[in-house]
Picture 1 (cartoon, rainbow, N blue to C red):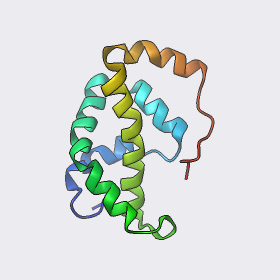
Picture 2 (picture 1 turned 30 degrees about the horizontal axis):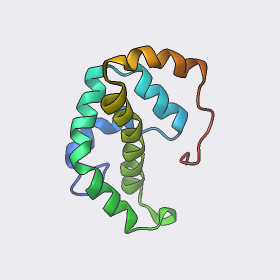
Picture 3 (picture 1 turned 180 degrees about the vertical axis):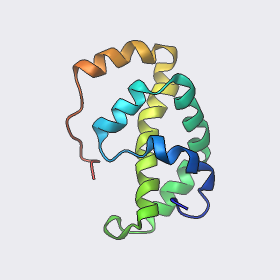
Length: 110
């Protein structure tokens, strides 16, 4: 199992949505299909609060590998939620602009 217990339903998304930098998460948001973004969003949204509660109980410096993956999924969810909740069908159009102004680094990069 690559995620903490209780988050098994997110396992299918680990390969695609775990990214170690904001620029990679942004690229995933841009280049994944609307269906892929929606499927991840639908699976992650009901587990977001439990995931954050779980991650808040352990200092970042001592997160297990599984907890680190869960944190990276929550960071990807932030990107995907903007695409799904705000951009909607205009996401593809806005993706072009993100390619012109790429994220080079962010405080959340680990």
